[in-house]
Every structure is written in C-alpha cells, then in structure tokens.
Length: 184
Image 1: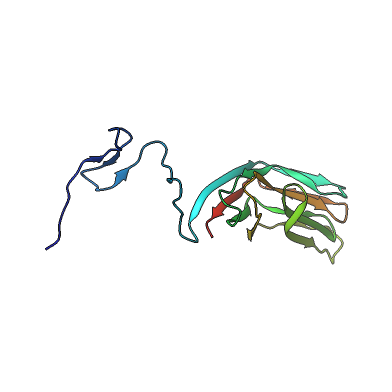
Image 2 (image 1 turned 90 degrees about the vertical axis):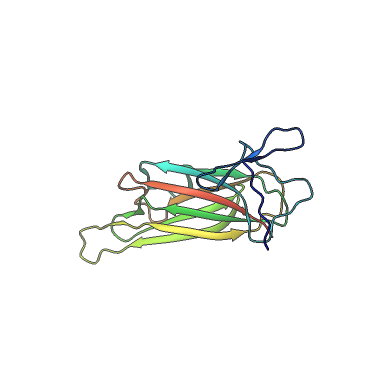
C-alpha cells in the first residue's frame, strides 16, 4: 500500500520561504529566489542559467572593411564551474544579408572580444547586371568551453568583405543572442 502525504506548504526551518502547493493544479510555486545548496550539483546536461539579449530594428554597414559590433547583440554570463560549457545561439531571424552585385558579407560570434567561435558567410551573385538583394535568416549555434568562472562576454559582429551594403534585421525584425550554461 502506498503512503500519501497531503500538505499545502513546505517551509524552511525558520518557518519562511516555503514551497506552496496549489490545491487545484497540484503544482508547486517557489519563492522569488530558488538556490541550489552548497555542495549540490546538477546532473550533466542540465541548464544552470540562461541569458538573452534582443536586437530590434535594422543595422547596416556600407563599405566596411573591418568587423563591427551588432549594436545590441552582446551578452555576459558567469559560469558557475570552469568545466561547464556555454551553449551560444545567435538567431538572426529578422533577416541578414547583402545588397549589391556580387557582394560578400560575414557575421561572427566572438568570446571576450577576441576569440572567434563561429562564422557565417553570405553572398549575392548577379549574373544579369541589375544588382540583387538577399535577406537570409540564419541561426548560429555552438557549444563553447570557456573554461572559466569569470564573467565571459559573447557578441555578434558583421563585415562587408566586398565593400557593399551588409545588414541585419532588414525588415525591422528581431534578432537574439542566447547563452545557456550547461552542466558537465
């Protein structure tokens, strides 16, 4: 025979910061801040924390020969363990592309402003001589190993390799940069 324990709330030893149970749904609601006790570890593959930034509106470059930061796509994360990894997802869904005849643009993700960890190249080709416009949504995803417990910065940059117009969010869309710490 199974045992059943019926409770409305579980409190800590001081009688505060309890876990309340909703009688109608059976779901628990936690206090504003839930923490993992010292010494406790999450199983490998668990998401420890998530950070996300959003870029709204269009940003473009013309005749740029060096990489330029995408204005709002920079985020910081501080891993809780140096063995944990960071899943980095740059979702450039608002559109990214090149505008012009035979144009090449590149988008990349940097760690701490200097280490390139991902690159996406897009090209336009115009065989008729009338110019062409390409808007291409893309997602760059990688599992990075920063090997640190210090704050780590990830950011997206873009460059026009052939000197024409390169843009992000061409239709005033939304792009995001998401960082997830993954337990190892």
